[in-house]
Each structure stands twice: as structure tokens, then as C-alpha cells.
Image 1 (tube, one colour):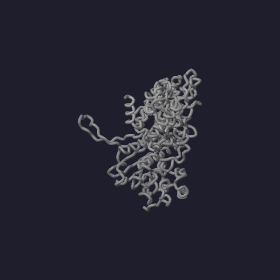
Image 2: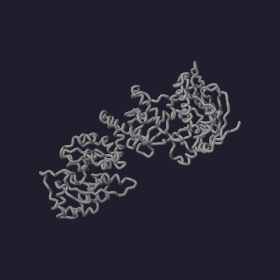
Image 3: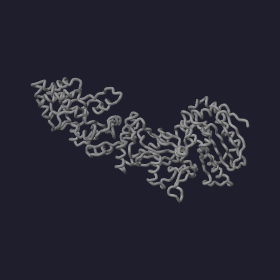
Image 4: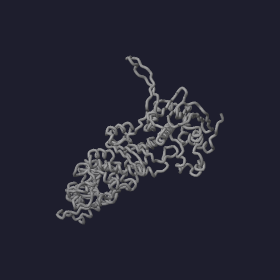
Length: 624
């Protein structure tokens, strides 16, 4: 029997199929099972228009049969089968006419839609097989034919005997090499896992003969080997069921089966869209933060299916970074896939799906915040930081989307509050949204800088995350109310007329001297308007606050960015009287007091003292 040659362009494409198109060898099984499912679909569609045909779904299946001894893997289907001409056309010519011209024009970078129209996935079989044999009998035909190929060299076609309509593909699995283990494609457990991963929701049963051991009937201590035909796939995906049929337990079970997390999801979102682009999605908002969430190892993305077949395990394009905590899947029959079905040809459909999903996630989070506050706060403690990163990143492009989802601890409410809640209860005379930054709530509670704002009865938001101030600077304002740090040089609070004013001019020389003592450590020394009971504090002029300085100093590319610090002295505190007296009588004491006050202010802010030994010696001098 003469061997037929693949056409030159077909041969080159086949070589590429075997060596470079697919990322993972295991997808060969996905491709062959998908083709088998298509073959059964063709009988179903034919039955719709041909009254002489009946379609009994229970009679149609796909079967996977490994044989370790013969080193073969069979994929059998009861589909429509192929005639001799169809074997010649479908398997003997890859990408038919114009493929070489297409390859030259596009260099396989664009225009995948041309190749994608032809069922080239079959040739993925050559990644794992030395010989591929196809035995097929077409519906309505009395004859069957065998197509066989050892790869790019060519193929043969000859008549054979086959009783039933359908197709049987026999792969002669390659021998192992130093780099590749082909034995895995003959192991029951491995084949089952590949089927579950990629083809779990193929609508027809995928069967395998599974072997095992069980107690022998009628015996307590004897065991017997058995082989039992099992259906491996689930067939009907949960996302194609009506929401009314499903319970919370069903969604939680799916979450666990898909290994989306070890926790229980806080919220599930079931989306069914039948519009410009049709798709179904099941999304989950996790309860617990994954252990690697804020590490480089974490991969965001949703599982992407095309008509029930897994295309991508992590499709990052479906989620913005600020919603990267969302788990789940999307299935659409309208996606344009490339030759390997591993990537998309065009991203228009994907962008549309991603846009809709983004809106839906935000809507569900707002609903959770409004109707299930405790659950939202639980979610926010895990993932609020990511929302703040979303506000800060991309130069604030997403701040409008995220600002109403943000929460901060309130000095008045003693719990997390939203920006909308804060603004809604601002007194008429309050100009700004005030905030204080620190390592913890307890630490901020003790900050001297909060005294004036608190005395005025204004609420203060506590920023304890390192991203907080950066996010708020990007936000700039909320409902036309600007944000203002309690450590800012200008708090925008008018001095009380009844309050005793201290004449800064009479202390000008003292402050100039103190500034000289501190050299370049501070921008200025001045009377404080914000302090009531504390003797001293640091405030800042300019955009960089002390907390921002701390965070920036810990970054790998530290550029030594410093806040413009101002040492503020409480003129109504007895320490100030000691300072004034020392300035008139003993300049050495002023030097000592100035350094002590500055170091005290640093400690209050949680900043390191440059010379701890000198500081302890200065304390001893005061005590002596």
C-alpha cells in the first residue's frame, strides 16, 4: 500500500504542531475528546433535520482505553464517523489552501482566525505518539477505513472491518526519554486527572475501565481484583443550571472541588449573559486571604472555558489587579481561539466580558457592604489593602471605581467606617477630612497632634496600613472634601478668639537658636496651635509626611526622601517656661533641652533616635 505525502505546507505546519504550538503535552487528550464530542454533536444536529434519525443521548459516549502492555491509548467515540474522502480531506491536508501564504504574511503572529477554522487539534496526538491510527465508519456507510501516520513523512488509507458507526483513534505512545516521561499517558489516575481538568463538562459521558481491589463477596479477609467501567466527567456544569435549582451548599461544593481555596467563600456570584457575547460565570469572594497572596508567587485569574472545555487555568485578563482576590470561572461559546485553543485570537470579546465582570464584582461588594456589614468587614480585613493599592496604582485611574468600597477606623465610632459615612456627619464648619497615621490604633490614640482636631469635635480617620496615605494622596478628595493630616502644618482650623495668643515675635530669637542647635534636622521651630497637654510634637510642611518617609525608607530603591519636619512647642506647657528661662540664663541648658525635646518628638512618632547613647547621657544631665 503506497504511502501518501502531506502537502509541503501541511508538512511544515504538522512539524510546528508537534514541536511548538502547544504549551503542555497533556492537552492532546483535550483535543481528541473535544473532536469526539463534536462528532456526536453532528449526529444530534443531523437528527434535528432528518426524520429518519433518532437521537438517544444515552447511546452516545466517548471511551478512553489505555493498554500498558501494548503501549497504546485508544479514544473511541460513537459519533458521526468519517468517509474515506473525509479522512483524506480532514486528516490528509492540514489547513488546506492558502496556509503557507498566510504563514508568510503573518509570521504566525496575527490572523489566527484563518487557521482556527480548521480542526488541527487532532495533530497534537503526535506530541505523545510515534504512530497515530484512525479507524472510522461514517453514518449511512457500509464501509470503514483506517488512516495511519507516523508523523510528517505521510499517511496511508485502507479499508477495514468495523461493525459500528463512529471513530476509534489508537495512539502508539512514545518511549520515555531522559527529559520526558510518556508512561504517564498510560496511567489510569493521570488520564482521569487530565479528563477532569480539561473535559469535565463535555456533555457526553467519557468512560474508562477502572481497575481496583475490593473485599470478596462472602469473605471477611479475602480480596479480589476487579475492572469497572466508570464515567469520569461531570457532564452538566453547575453554571448551566438555573440559579433556582442551586443551593449555597452546591456553590460551596463546587468551590471545594475546583480547589479555589481551603476556606468557605463569603459570597458567590452566578452570572448568565445572553447578549452581544454569551457567557456564564461563577465567581467567589473568599473568606480567608491565601498564604501567598501578597507574594510574587500568587497568580491572579479565572478559569476560562470555551463551550465547557478548559482553555486557560488562570486567565489574568478577566480580572483587574484590585479584584485579583476573586476566584472562579467563565465559560463562553463565543470566544475566538487560536490554533492551539490555549490563547485568544482577539481580545475584544474578553475585554467585554472582563468589563461586565468588573461591574458585577463591584456591585456585589457594595451590596455586601450595605446589607451584610459584618461579612464585608471580614472581607475588608483580608483584602482591603488590595483595594487601596487599586486606588494608588495606575496614577489613580481606578479611584472612582473603588473609593466607596474603602473603610478606615474612626476615632469617634471606634470601628471601620466608609468615606461616605464620615462626610455625611461632618459639622458645617469642618473644611477637611482629617486623618492620622501610625503603626496601630493604640499608637495613634496617643498622638499629640490629634489634640486640637479632637477638641473641635471633628472625627479622625486612622491610617495603619503602609499604603493608606499614598492611596489618599491619589484620591485627593472625596465629595469635594480634601484630606488633611493632623500633622499638617496648616490644619485649617481658626484659632479660638478666647484662647490666649502667644506672641511669636518675642520668642523669635529662642526659636532661631533652637533651629540652629538642631541644624538640618528640622525645617523650623515654632509655637504650636494644635498641642493642648503635650509639650512637643513634630509636624510637616510639604507633601511628604513622616509616615510616608518611614515607608519610603524601607523600600529597596530608597532614595532618601525626607519629610520637611517642624518642631512644635506648646507655649502653655511649663516646659516652655523652663526653655525661656534657660535662654536668658544658660545657653548650654537650651542646647540640652532642645535635643531632648527633639528626641522626645521622634520617639512619639516611632522614629529612630540617631544617637541613643547621647540621648541617655542628656537624660542623666537633667537628672543630675
